Length: 264
Length: 274
Image (cartoon, rainbow over all chains, first blue to last red; front, side):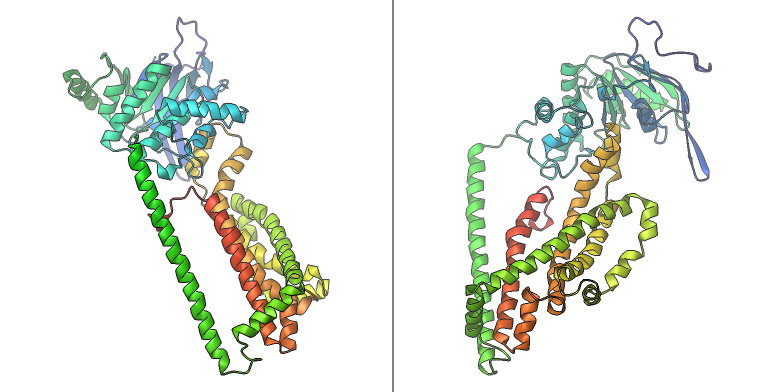
């Protein structure tokens, strides 16, 4: 599959359970003034429904670019992106794709609940429904009671949880996360891992997350896709066949980490 | 996460009684300050003729007189109305203009020299132009207030547009928010503090400038009365009108500006109280 041009392939292939995300031969080049940077080259990736997929690789391997292509914000120069069985250009239910940034990106002039509502304001949901759903999302991340707090009054972990609530309030089928916990301290990060897995148990969305932290990838993911350095391509996809919750003391975790580090 | 509720109540009531004591101390300080100022004033007035420096008693009587016969309220109202109109028009013009200059790079570059030039033209010059164009009328004062306030508002709003956080725009794009919603939900709230600073400055300058305009370009208002009193060497009335103005400004600042600012920007981490 790696060396064939897949222009002819459509997203509607007759498959038993179509993958939620499929990338075929995706390539992306950035040009600015006099530089041309080939960021991604021939990326092929398949994400099954309700899978948690981690994306790791060296700095500059194009992980974030790839995530942005999946989210539809960036268009690939070559190749095809299929979301929920539809080509990315034709897909129009982007509300079902949640996105969590590296920093919490909470609007400082809005309270926690109004920040969560923000995700619903792109559409035409009534004010009452927005408030109700935002409250539910905050309850989901166990921040009930902090609806009216402003971001400056919240700790880093709490702001992260508000950001998580915001990405979940649209009831996404797919959750994309770009190093969402990298700015947090180790303990808060561990708590957020638990939080994410707890929410995942309840909502069972498909998760694709980018991380620099190999341990994080092994602790959370069903599959870990390892990207090569620029131009980035998927070197290998490693299945993590361990039941969750996993912890660092398990020898299998250590061996997976070793294996992945060798691949980066 | 959940605190012991009885601890929370104790610390809250302690904080309340502390802040009450601080507030009383502050009021005491203010009262003492006023007493000192009046004291110095009174002492100074004893050695000088009353048409140079009238004492507190004389000024109080003059104030009483103009308040009693409605003079104070009428003229204050007129001046206030003119300043308000000039200010509101300046805001209505300045806010969109500032946003456009900030959002559209070419427009910004094109019009950039205009603002410093406008700022250089002093309000006295605007007053002279206004008299030529509008004669002795309300429009004169309103025009001067407008020309002084508008560049201030435009500059501040323009500066505000530069501080719009690109990360938030990216967030809105990820949420597929239409462009006009990005403007109202991200640009406007980001610009608001800058607009407020500009508006506050503009209002303060507007007051001062309206007096200048009124002394030479109208037949009513506080500025007119000030000049009239000076012409008649009724220095006690000059003081009385000045005091009126000072009290008016202080009232607007304390009673309107301060609470408004506290409400609008309650989401800001206050560096001073940390």
